[in-house]
Amino acid sequence: MVREVKKAVRIPIAVKIAPTFTAFAHFAGQLDAAGADGLVLFTRFHRVDLDVVELEVLRTVEVSTHADLSLRLRGLAALTGRIKASLAAAGGVQTALDVVKATMAGAHVTQLVSALERNGARHLGIVKRDLETWMAEYEWSSLEEMRGNMGLSRVPDPAAYERAHFRMAHR
Ligand SMILES: Cc1cc2nc3c(=O)[nH]c(=O)nc-3n(C[C@H](O)[C@H](O)[C@H](O)COP(=O)(O)O)c2cc1C
Image (tube, rainbow, N blue to C red; front, side, top):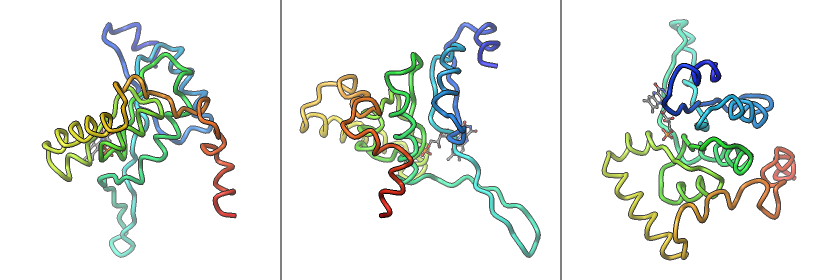
């Protein structure tokens, strides 16, 4: 589909993907090879619940929390430096520190929706100001400088990103 769309249009295309592929990084590589200009990590599914009295399926879109960021950090860290497409973090970004984390994991872009729904559009200005303050305090001159520096292939303990660590965390 990406190959066909790329043939048909001249604008850059970004593909928003789900976190549920078995070989997610391999699939992302295939999208990259097919010409996707950007990958957005990750789509959020509607939550499904059951009303067991009325026998109805209930679909809701809930605003995200900070906890949703973790899956994005892991996905970004796996891809950064390995594909040509730009990477966007979408899901769980609430604060300037979340922007720093997403960027260090490899994001070129961070998207906020829930945080703006919760706090209003003025929150964007607060995130920007806090980001500038944080970067000055820790002597980062640009987002480019920190982008991907916490990627899977660049951290001293890449296994910390791996699933195996889940077992270790529960020992
Ligand atoms: C009420 C609501 C409606 C949304 N509708 C869409 C949509 O139609 N298409 C889409 O790709 N993403 C949709 N999203 C997801 C956002 O584009 C975005 O990826 C996600 O909300 C970013 O995460 P955040 O809410 O944690 O900032 C929606 C999100 C919310 C909260």
